[in-house]
Image (cartoon, rainbow, N blue to C red; front, side, top):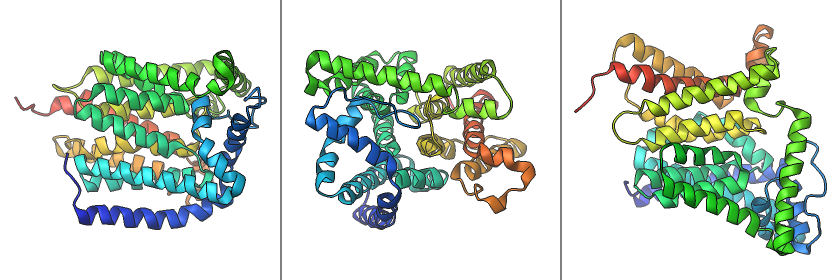
Length: 378
């Protein structure tokens, strides 16, 4: 791990301050996700029961631990809602700056900055909606760094917290199990359960369990009504004319590709590659996943950008071309109407899923095919 120089730290702070000055006004104007969840945090403060009294119009409310974590912002909102929104946006900018600095300190500034550029519009969308994907990014980056430095339990703690925050990062706990990182797995599971139930102790032990159960039941009911309509991969399959059975086959196929890539690892662990790959899969199969969820592809992008270029002129060109196309798609640069002819509407509609699938496939191919063709160092 390379420590940042004073000049680099100052540059990160300056860029974050500039970015905060841009996204805070936008978030205050558009940030409906955060405001919706603050209402539940306010109910938690007053002790109103049940906490989850109804379902939102779209998607599902944030999990119990996240609602608990928003309590300080709900208290500020009682005085000034714009101030609360500004503080949330500023905290997320700080998390983004920390994540980029940690990635750059270990894997270099070039891949760190290119990875951010490769998810530019999803990142901006997160701040426009004042969602919490940057919080998850910060926790996942912390876990990757700790795994790379041999701190398995602490990495498991970060993933456990991420699971309590938004559930779908729990797929990374299965990755811990697959890699037999039992200490990290036990820590993560314990943290996720303890935080989910403990955050609701405002209602007593029985009431806390009931609040968690209410959230689970309400979320499942909403997902059953919508089917695969809110899942990135499911919506992609259905939009292309597939059925629910086809969706399950697509999910199984993506899982099989990721498992094959994990099983074909070279000598030694590569937590950046593996966590990045599993995180992209988690976003694709998440029951609810909006376009800004794809900002979590940043670790996968860093893994791709720091991977050795395949030997051979044609394979090297194919590798770079795949990353270029995936970057263009995931960045959102082509989502503007005038850039797409009518014949390519299907590309625009599923712009981010195409990009995520291409990135996933490129990373898997690098390990399954391209890496094996290269001479290995002893």
